Image (cartoon, rainbow over all chains, first blue to last red; front, side, top):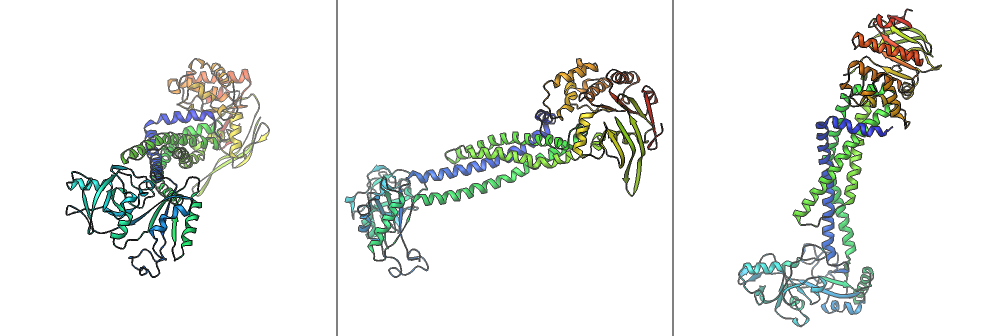
Length: 407
Length: 221
């Protein structure tokens, strides 16, 4: 039984023992605050990675060469090249995809290279060569900072375009003029003709754009050791669904025969998978925050138990005047719920503030999570009821005669 | 209106069973002013707890307004206490956080009725006991006699059929105690309220129309 006058009463009795109330509040504020902060940060990280991911557009398919169940060549246990492995994708068949599959607007095949890279005789760390076509720039949403990108006229040329990280490395090595500098990849010397803008990490790209040295794919296929096209990025035409486009490519590759096969990944699949992972991550963070919430709840229970003990006589008087057990229980439950809700309110502010700070220093985009606020209100209410129930029950079970006699 | 028949109450203290009330029979009519008098340890507090429905007898019958009440469940007893019994205690037992007016209104809180004119009624009762000018004071700003007056107003607020007073003058000096007794007598005479006063003081008992003397767990006269 809850009477409106109990609300006023509860507020008054909480105010009567300020110090204790404040101490219990701190526990709840920290508890709720850490749950909110954790969940909120989880959400921000999730939004952040999805945003990076979506920046490239969701109309991108990644087409990978299917390996005959053995893994890429060169890996232990992989079948010998050319034996059980599926046949290599030929550049001309790949470049024909947009004309054969109306659902695909453009393709950008790429080939990865290896080998030592050096500049004026000094080895360059953290960079890797890649053979690409002119369409690569647009499909991967890259932009030029200086010079120009590779064009279809650069077939077999010894030109290269470098990422911003590589450019910085060259400047550190003393290159005063980036364009025209010469980089050695293996036995070949390449002339820098352009520099791409810096790009945030992550997303659909399977490479680190800032650390790349791009050469024309025809050059790459010729000079890189064991060069083989393993990955193609394709942009889906306007008005075609990713699934339709995927089916077209599958059919086209199958029609080639000769044991060629590909695996196609659409952004939806990756996003769904990421979201699932992120949910687990958020849940985990929330669980960690809950530990401090439990500590806060025990604080509330402690304060309420002391309050019941101190107010035994009051309980006796109220019982004599006609309060039922339920009335007494309700009175103390309201007190603990009010305590927890006030704590929850400050906790929400504290938690959102903390997550804002974390986002600010991590340079993530802050997002206010309404579900976190609802969670905070709900959880603090639940804490009040859960940890307040036992003391309230103790109070309601007091024998009125005993309660009246106590001081 | 109040009939006790062969009320017995025993407590188990360790292995021994102590019988505090050994067959109390008592009948009180509507409008009586009765005192139950006896030395401490005679069982009058236990009897008062049973009449006040704060405790249940081990055996015997207790009829209030013609209905057996002693063996009802806890909620039912609370409701009867709230509706039909007004308590006045030796230590006043006002809640220190509440004003005099709020203390008087307290029993009405547990009635569940909204009571639009609750405050009016409480003010009226404070006026009746001569405390209307102290309505917004808290108990620690009032003297003992004033606190007991507020407590009497609180006992009256629910229109009870019975006022049960446990040593109501026990904490007051003689003069103030006399004033409180006068108040009880006036309420009894003018409004016909049944008053039962439990006391060990023959001087107080003598002022009541009827005295029931208790000794060793039984009523002598």
